[in-house]
Structures are given as structure tokens and as C-alpha cells.
Amino acid sequence: MAVCAAGALGRLYTERAAAFHVRAQDRDELARLFTAYNAAQNGIAPENLSACTEPLLEGPPGAKWDLVLSNVPAKAGLPVLEDFIRRLGGLLAPGGRAVLVVVHTLADLFRRRLLETGGKPSREEQGGGYSVFVYESGPGIPAADTADGGLFAPRPAYMRAGCDLELEGTALHIDTVYGASGFDNPGGAVLAAVKLAGRLPPALPGRGKKALVHEGGQGWFPAWLIRAWNLPPHALVLSGRNILALMAAAHNTGVTSVIPAAELFSEEQFGDFFPGGNSRAEKTPFDFIAAFPEYIPGPGRHEALWEGISLLLAEGGLALVSFSSGEAERFDRKKPAGFTRKGDLKRDGFRALAYGRRPAVSR
Figure 1 (cartoon, rainbow, N blue to C red):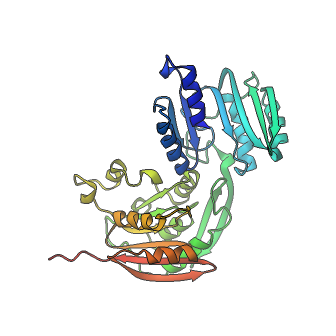
Figure 2 (cartoon, rainbow, N blue to C red):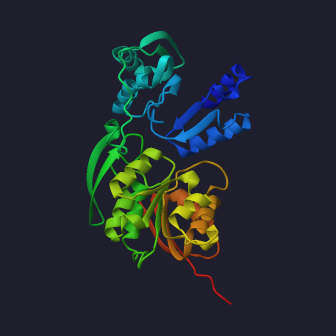
Figure 3 (cartoon, helix red, strand yellow):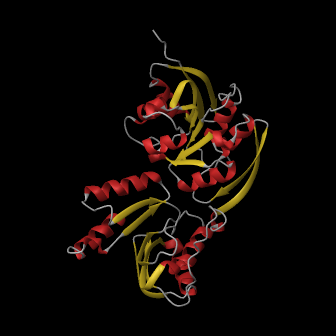
């Protein structure tokens, strides 16, 4: 949608390319990457389109927009959608318009709530299971909330539930949010990983050691890791695709080192966490990695995961991965030289595997 909008505006402003800017946003880092890639493929300059990974309607404080386009995520959660409608008008400049595509089951909610905010409906179309609303800003619309304070303070609508659970003898309290998996329980992959990790000796003795949890959901596994292994939050780094999950995991663990997945291998980000040395090869990789890969169809996905582990895991380090039993089997077959399996646990259709990286032999 953002690429199409920027392309259309580019045709209108052929003489003044800097006269427009499109801010594209999605909670998924992969969506951001594809948006940026497709924009470049279509000759759209970065100054005309910025792709961002962020929650709904986030952006520069105080920014006003002439046009807001949204294919509204139907499964965002009712409180989040209500908050979206409430704040939407406050982001429109005088005379600005919003064009919203919603599934038919949400049409009545949006029709009613948009009128309550003081907006001026100008058009509505229906077809193919969707409704399209066009409305203009009005004097009764409240200003957008741009307060600081992380995820929960300015955006309480994202809060879903507080969950208390004991994992392998460790009591946890997790605040879960809409828009991320594992909102009422850790899930099979995490449960298998916790059970296997509980049988392994802690992999992070001594000072200066670092751990990475990739795609850790709402924070179940990293929160358990911090308590079960007595790991200080500053020794842990969180990464993943879903920005909402990352924010929730950071909230639940106290971890401040959070890296979107696409930036994990960048020289700039790597240097922030591992200062010293003139190149990434000279900086200290992670001593422990736990990964919960999301299934993405296509060839080479297991090789790519092994490549990432090889780049980020220190010699003598330990890597733990957990996913469906079928995917785990295919992943294990691709194990490269230099890694030794240290643990294997199957549980309810999921499988966790642990691998040690053998130290290089000096000659």
C-alpha cells in the first residue's frame, strides 16, 4: 500500500519530488524490509518513503498527516482497535483524510466509533468481504497521545493480561500484549526449550559473557533464563521480527539491549554491544544463543539459521533452538562441521536441540 501511494504521489509531483513523504509502518520487521526493498525497486527515493517497524499510529511526536491509509489488522485486539480509532483523527492535519480498509465484521464498530470521535464521513464502499471508509478530520477529535514512557504507559490498550506460571521450578509473572504470540501461555517451543535448558549447566559463567534470545515472544524464555541461570539483564540481548513482542519481552525482563532482527548483523549494532576491535571478527560473539525460529517457506532457511548461529556464537559457546519436530529434524540434518549436539528433547510435537561450538584447534 505504501509503495503504491508513493508511486502515485510521485506522478503528481514530478517537478517537486521533495513535496511529499510517505511513512510506512508495520509491527513486523520482515514487512518493513520488503517495503523498503520494493520502494527501491520502483525507483522511490528514501526521502519520499520511510519504512518503519512500530506500533499502530506511532511516529514523530506532534506530526500531522494529510492522508492516513490503513489496511486495519483485524486481529489486533478490540482495545487496540478502539485506541486506533480514538487517536486517528488527532494525527490528521486540517482538511486531512483517512482511508481505512476493514473486514465486514468490524464495519459497524468503525462506522459508529468514527462518528463518535467527531470525524466527517465522506464515503463508504463495500465488497469482497471488506468495507472501505473515507472520513475527514473534525473539531471534536481528541489530540493524539504522544507521551513517552515505553509500551504500557502511553499505550495501555496494548496490555492484554498478566500471567503467572511456574516453569521448571521457577515462578514467573509475564504481562502479555495484543499483537504477539504466547499471550496466555509460553507455547510448546518455549516449554521444550525450558525443559532442555534446565538439564544443561548454565552456559554463562564469569564476567563479560553475553547471551542472545532470538524470537523470544513476549519474554517467557528470557525471563526464565534470567532467574534460573541467575543472569543479569545487562548480559542479555533480545532480537526478533515483531516489535510488539520485543517491547513486551523487554518490559518483562528489564533487558535494555533490544535489536530488530534485520539489524542484528549490522556492524553498527554489533559494535554497540561488543566494543573493542576494528572489525566484527575482532569483537566477542555471544556465549549462549536461544532461538525460536518462525517458519518461513522456501529453500535454504535452515542453512541461513546455521549461518547466523555460526556468525554470532563464540567458540566454546552453546546454542539452543526449538521449533516443531519436523522442522527440528530438517535443521539437525544441516548441522555444519564444528558443532556437537549437547542435548535433545521432544515434547508434544516440539523439539529442542542444544549444540556446542568446538573451540578452534591451534597448530
